[in-house]
Amino acid sequence: MTDTAGNATTTSGDEPVTMMEYFMQLEYSDVVSAPVMRFRDALMDARLIAQQCPKCKLVYVPPKGYCPIDTVELDERNEIQLADRGVVTNYTVVTPVQYYGQKETEPFVRASILLDPPGGMLILQDVLDIPVAEVRAGMRVEAVWAPKGERDVDEIGNRSGSALEGSLRGFRPTGEPDMPAEAFSDKVW
Amino acid sequence: MATAHEPCAIVGFGQTKHKKRRDDLSLPGLVREAAERALDDAGMTWSDIEAVVIGKAPDPFEGVMMPELSLADALAAVGKPMMRVHTAGSVGGSTSIVASSLIMGRRHQRVLTVAYEKQSEGNAQWGLAGGRSGGMGAGGIFAPWMRSYIRGSGAPEHIGWKVAVKDRLNAVKNPYAHLQLPDITIEKVKESPMLWEPIHFLESCPSSDGAAAMVLTDEEGGRAASKPPAWVLGTAMRSELGSFPGRDTVRPQAGVECAEMLYKEVGITNPREQIDVAELYVPFSWYEPMWLEGHDIAGPGEGWKMVDSGETEITGSFPVNPSGGVLSSNPIGASGMLRFGEAAQQVRGQAGEHQVPGAKVALAQAYGGAAQYFAMWVVSSELQPSLS
Ligand SMILES: [Zn+2]
Image 1 (tube, rainbow over the protein chains, first blue to last red):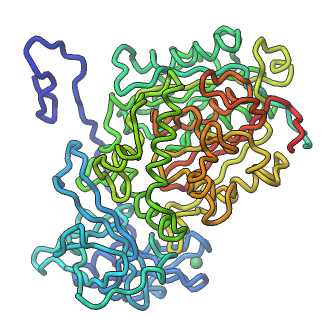
Image 2: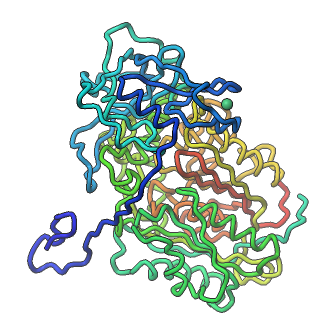
């Protein structure tokens, strides 16, 4: 016997079925906000943009359209271009749990990247072209963009946060000397 | 302590035996098992209850939406006021606080509160990932913050292993705890598989089915209770955004302010001295020293030293999680209420084998989301204890 995901629900013929898996699904249309649309357009062009709050100077990547701290509205006038190079300020190596829909099978990295001036944090980024055991805080990295014809931003909505892998595959080491990790202790998220 | 509000007493506590899979019980059966035990402990029946407050972690974890509606029958809440609370992993704590507020505000005299999770009937990893690939689980989000703590405090790596061993040995004294690992050692924790660097398998909480429940009353109910009550001296909830540039994820501001507000309300000026025992939400070992510092029980960089010197053992000067904590049982929605209820059991003198002798003042805490929701309370065996 199999469930809706095609997994066997019994291990042998004489064992009673005690549980069957069914997956719920909810489909809805998300009206993508204007700042996120501009962010998507920039990604298609292999560029990162953000909004900077004029009051607290914090940089929001992706742009939110407002600063939640000062409750001020942000728009195109507050837009800034970001660097696509930076430094790993923190990371973890995740051992993937094999839930339904999980495609990862081997341990993978998720890193926080502090971009070069004018700054901005990108969290939960993949680090490519290096064994996971060699990733470290302080490592200098640069963006790995998907080739122009392959870039896809359809998955990016108002709540996707930093999941950009359709266009920005991740970051790879530049080989430059590491920076001291202590300098970024307050920029890990 | 000025109490303009009605005093609130916990007169009954109940919990299920927490297990990987309680397939002997349906969802209604699970919450009912905990609720019946709380009523028995209070010497009450269903008809004594005026209102029910229920909490659980996000609905996608079991895929049963708005379960408070279908569970009303099992909790004899049909025709009574029933309220659902949502604050992610901290929900068991927030639910307890909401229930206490119905007493303190003199809206009701006897309230039943219940929290649960039946992890075996769903997939929390799938739920947390929203069904998408590359999900990191809660551990993946928290792991870099623990590394930041380790780097900032200079804590040696054995601190995490030590907490993992302590809580599991405490759980051996708690017959309701899910994990029973009497043979656990530092060596076994260290050698267990790495899940999210720096968190090993044995430094992580299990997935559990379970429920917790409490009966809360007004002052009259507390004074008339057949067993000693626990008095709620103060409660606090705080939250902050899960992500913003410059956020302090190791010592979130909401957690600092939540504790500050609570201590002020209760009249605590030196938590380490004035609190006898604490049940803190520690799903991954490093969160014990992190919350000791994050709630100003220990100074910066001092939390891990309390662990290292054995102060947080049951026999230490500041016992943390004598029940075995979240590291030993994690029915997510119930995990916060287990902290709040176990704190009450300690000051009621009802904690059994994991009782801290003479505990008079106990702290409970729960956190949730990306360490952004906080709920805390302080309970005592006396309504107006002298906090020395
Ligand atoms: Zn601002």
